[in-house]
Image (cartoon, rainbow, N blue to C red; front, side):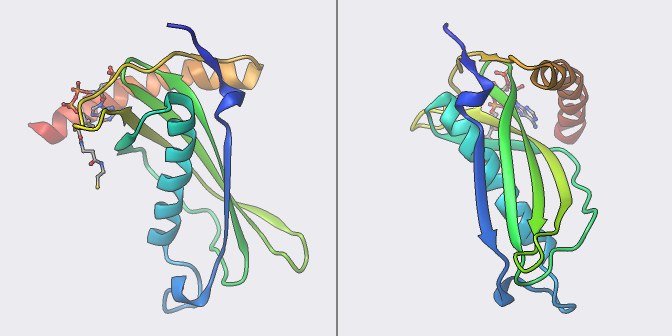
Amino acid sequence: MEGKTVRESISEYSELALPNDANGLGNVLGGKVMHLVDLAGAMAAIRHARTPVVTASVDSLHFIHPVHIGELIVLRSSVNRVFRTSMEVGVKVETENLLTGKKLHTCSAYLTFVAVDRAGKSQQVVPVIPETDEEKRRYRDAGDRREYRLAMRMRVKE
Ligand SMILES: CC(C)(COP(=O)(O)OP(=O)(O)OC[C@H]1O[C@@H](n2cnc3c(N)ncnc32)[C@H](O)[C@@H]1OP(=O)(O)O)[C@@H](O)C(=O)NCCC(=O)NCCS
């Protein structure tokens, strides 16, 4: 199976934080950001696999800064590694204050998507080819994360 480079599926998704996304403090709900992380991750996974995908798991998510209403939420995603039918995708979330231009790193997450056919059966995915040093590091680290993730999955299934 011929591979595809990471840069072929790098994706970016932006959304303005609006009042209906707010919690009681007037900041964006964490669940709203989680939803956007899932969407942005799926975009890179689908671009790479060119098939529908389902979210198999999301690694832990730590919010470093709140997102304020009126700020732009910018999500960047890329495929770190393909295993057989599953892919690890990394998503980085930043906010931009459009009035000042100040940018803050809100959170990052690793998600695993599985490529499926229309009946929901998992499908093999073409390998990803890391080119830059950073892409090669992410590729290596994704292998360690997978081991931990699959061990956790076994515990959930028990
Ligand atoms: C994810 C899903 C397709 C896996 O199906 P399955 O029958 O367990 O299939 P397999 O055991 O063959 O696993 C398929 C791949 O998923 C990976 N996988 C399964 N569960 C995983 C998990 N929790 N975390 C990471 N990878 C996982 C497997 O390692 C395998 O990867 P590989 O082919 O690259 O080696 C299935 O559990 C599913 O459809 N879950 C629901 C997905 C969904 O609806 N998400 C949205 C929730 S609202």
